[in-house]
Image (cartoon, rainbow, N blue to C red):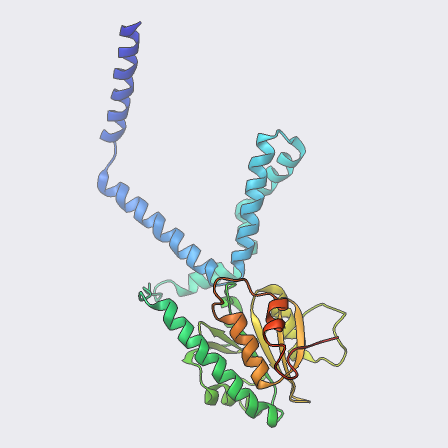
Length: 298
């Protein structure tokens, strides 16, 4: 018995040593490094667009497939097996815009390392951007010049930003005002603000299919609601006809803000609030004493 156990361990150890002897250390390290770099590039690309949500959906489908196998759910397993059997074609179809962009960026992309105080810098830039948008909003409102400003949050809007002109500029009242000046070339599109900086201007946003919206609302307001339905963005709209300030969040449009109430709302949505999740109820409780703040679209 002991001889058999001894022979088993000797045989197992011999196999392990044999595996390590066949490994070329340099090529193995290079192989793993290149694979890691590929995964990093894909994850970085996905993180920069709404494709992140699609990737999460595919992950949930895969977990469902694993559960179906464990519970011996033959019908569900069969359907999901067919789905994942054509996973390569499915991924190419779903992520076609992202795959095209990553191929276009090859050869001139750079890896940027964030400083240790990146979060503090983002908060400062976001505060500055809120002030700039509200200050510019006063001028645009008085002159009845339309505006559509999207504050990006967790859902990255790189695919939307790519439809416009990339600026990556400091946010200031003068820049925002100039972008929406009615004779400026980019005034018809939306401005995307990421981490307190103007990422892109003249962007095209998806329109909402919500038939319950007021017929008084034009394309800007419907685009604001549309992007807020497809992401967690906070969208500021200035009406060209009336000069009214509106805010779209999570598919809900609230109108008739003053610059003061708009600033209060943006600060609650975009700045850290002691770890508490911001909801519309908390927001409007926070600004209830500010005149004309947030009338529902009705």
